[in-house]
Amino acid sequence: MKVRKWSPGGMIYVLLAGVWFLTTLFPLYFTLISSFKDDQSIFSHFFAPPATWMVENYEKAESMIHILRAAGNSLLVSAVSIALMLAVAMMGAYAVSRRIVPGSGGIHTLLLAAMMIPIQAAIVPVVQMVNAVNLSDNLLALSVVYAGINLSMVFLILKNSIDSIPRDLDEAATIDGCGPFRTLRHVILPASKPAVATCAIISFLSIYNELPLANVLIRTKELRTVSQALLNLKGDFGTLYGISFAAIVVSVIPTLLMYLLAQEKVEKSICAGSVKG
Image 1 (cartoon, rainbow, N blue to C red):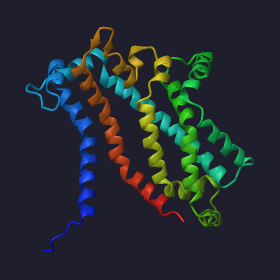
Image 2 (image 1 turned 90 degrees about the horizontal axis):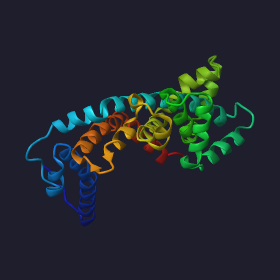
Image 3 (image 1 turned 180 degrees about the vertical axis):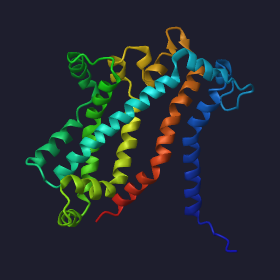
Image 4 (image 1 turned 90 degrees about the vertical axis):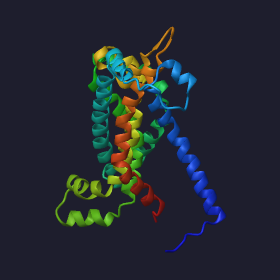
C-alpha cells in the first residue's frame, strides 16, 4: 500500500480547507441546535447541544406565523418566476446571440444597463404599475415582477453560454429541416443546461429570500412569503429567538434541496467556462 507523503504546501491547503469548512458549517450547526432551545439556553450555552430538545418551537412557529404555508407561497412564486424568466430570456438570448432580430447590439446594451438600477430605486414605480392594473396582493403579479427584475442577469448569462456554442450546430439543424424554435429546443437548450441550472439557482436564492417588494405588494396574511413571515416574529418588545431559529430551519430546507439537486450542472458550467477557448 502506497503511503501518501504530505508536503508543507499540501498540509497548509488541507488546514485552510478545514478552517473554511468549519466556518461554513458553523452557522448551520448553530441555527439547528438553537431551534431546539429556549431563549435563555441560546445565550447561556452557545455551542452546546440542547439539554432538552424543544420540538414545540417548530409547532409554535407554525401556529404563530404559518411558516409552512409561507414557505409554500415563496416556492410557488419562485417556480413561476423562474419558469417565466427562463422561457423569455432563453428565446431572447438566442435571438440576440445569433442576431436573428435587428438591433441585437442595442438590446444587449439596454439589458446590461438595466442591471445597474438598484431594486430600491424601482420599488415606487413597480408598486404604482401593479396598483394601476389592480393586481396588488396577488402572487402571480409578484411572480411577474420578480421575473422582470432578474431578467437582465439571466439573459446575459444565457447569452454568454449560447455564444460559446458553435454555429455549425445551428447550420446542421437547419439542413435537417429545423427552424429557429426547433433549433433552440433540440440543440441550444440541451447544450445550455449547465447555464440554465446556474440561472435557476441564482434566481431562486434572490426570489425566495426577497423582502422589500413582497412587503409592499402582499398584505394578506394567507399570501405572505417566507421573508414576511419571519419578519413578524420580531416584535416591539423583543424577539422569540428559539421559535425564530425553528422557522429559519424550515425556510432554509428548500434552498438546500434546490442547490443539492442542481449543483452538478452548476459545477459543469463553471468548468466549461474555465476551459473556454
